[in-house]
Length: 525
Image (cartoon, rainbow, N blue to C red; front, top):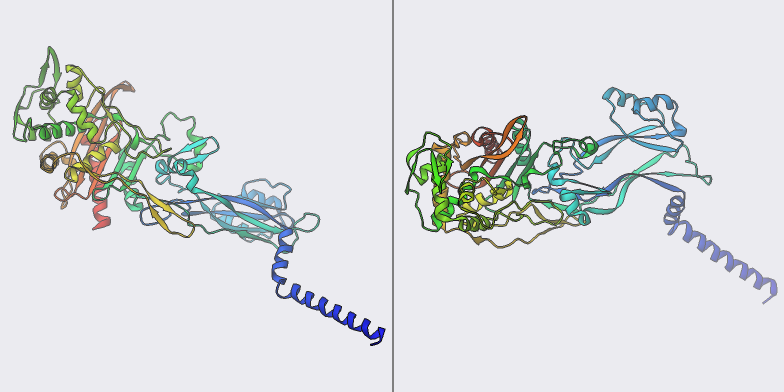
């Protein structure tokens, strides 16, 4: 074989190998390499940090559920920078592409759409603009935060962000004519709450109409799921700075903050008196308008006195004299024992990072302090959530179920993992619970709770007007309470309303309870 022929063969094989390599690069690897080349010249501008979603019980997104309009301005392609900046309401920098959240009115948005170099697009908003469920959701920041956002920060953190991407040339300048691309990663990861979006909305609406400060809670009797948790005054997570110097306490979740209990605490006294066998609903007391306790006079809420009155009647009319007598018979130790059996004195949810007061139930008291405790005054303080827990136990015929706010977690693929709950345990005998249900029903039908009456369903509950010892605008602050359940004969929902400084539970809290109940009846039946 000649030398020239061998050289030709080598050259041919080399060309064949080169052609094969070129074919491999161009076809099988072409798309991948092209993407890599583009990626080397692509720059991303983060426009929103991604975070896990907070869902309600039906897997409806409570966060990331709304969108805000944004404008992207490609500076090199923008024909009228001055007018664009005016319409957007923000001056431009020297960056090639700039992104702005828009608060523009529709007319201004229509002008921006027609401008060269300006594009409009939607970015999901983390929080509802109306502050929906704000005290439960809370917020996070570099300096801290509170609520579910803070308590489950690890579960809600995602290492990614929505962004704008653009192609730049060798001089790091945006290549004109190629535009940009908005990149959004879909995620399902998050936290599933027990909240029912529609019941929450109904409770918030009722509270907004009736009170400036207070709380409302709705619980599913059968499951212990918290369906609504409202605190007022409200706040908007997108405008935190405006509340920092406020003295109204917008950031306080009043649903889990302790307050003077007032007459709702008489439920504890009645439960203890029946369970210990000291009294029955028919036991008779004498009310003259005041009670002498070892030389000190304690007044009834009816200064003229109720006369001869049974425990059932005294409960319905919230007669203080009846409960002074019961308190002296039971003693402080027994009273406090039953309060703690209902879950008072410690947090109900016990979620790390979700701040919740335990209230206060004293360990001991002298005879005069016991008289005050007997009507929910003095050293007694409870949270609206603890009161809801108590009514759930009675509605469940004496079984205490764990109340639930956080139902479980959702992974990246949308799979839900339910959080385990404690097994129910008995606090009262079934007979005592049934007797209390009847007494609570009488409060609404013929006692102080008539403003909470629900047509067709019926309701049962207890009013409370708690003197605080504090003054506001020269007047003594008195908190209004109403807590109970409905329907009266087959309890399905517990609702507790606190009207801070509402003066009278019958007048300020009971009507809110009624409105929430009526809306739930409309929604569910």
